[in-house]
Image 1 (tube, one colour):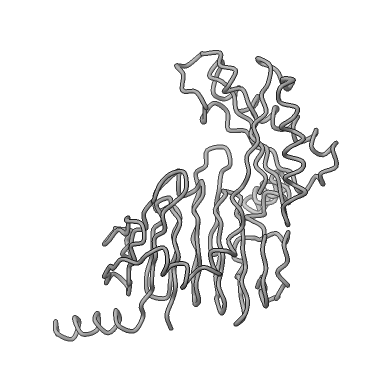
Image 2: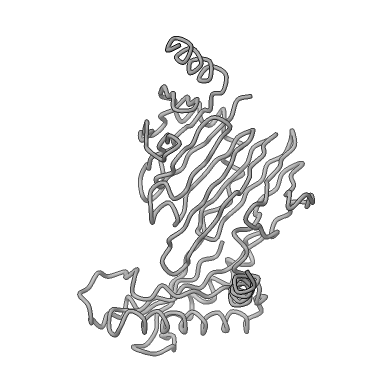
Length: 143
Length: 193
């Protein structure tokens, strides 16, 4: 256990803060925020995102995000988008990117993770699982 | 029992429906979105431009929409997508971490691009040709990226906005045999996001 903690700490130190960032907020319209570990952060352009963050928009809100593998998202009004899992090796481009769209709408332009391996990028809705094979598309969840 | 199961599936499909609209992609052409079962197997593939999948679990029906309908339904959403990352290429002298003179104007262009983008960050990716061992090229490519990163920081970019990575010889611009000296492959790509 201690060993695992030590290794975890070492990896965290080597990677530095820049590598923990999985992406950045680029565009914000209306009411939009980021939920992180129970805290609600105001979404502003330049804000960095981490794995497990949740993008939340209000009735007039929209949020545009670019990830470190060059994937791009925009979340429409009344949306809830969980960035459940994001792993990316910038040298090999191997990775895994799981998003949960709980409600609302999401436009996606996939990046290097999906290009390297089909279905390594997935979008889950309350009812379905979508595998991304290098593309631009929109998902909308109807309540 | 079977009737009940079928009914349950139908109900699921009827009440929890997702709409997946595939758009014509950029440089790589239109891609595809697969509807997967719990084990990751594809039960349907949406792969035509403007094809729409109505999806509830593994129940999928498809129809076709148009550019006009997409603009009406999703125009504002698509406008909120951040701009495509911009890539600037800088070249190196053989086996070294020194830029060629011809690469200097591109350095100025990329600095202007950073100023023009809200919330911009920069990734510097080093590449090599196929001369030398794969592992050595990973190190050399990272060294080249570090040189450019330091240059950008020297020109005023905040250190936490600039990351350096090495791709070694994995992504040549010009495909060659192993051990080929190719100036076009000895490069650093600077991505402004």
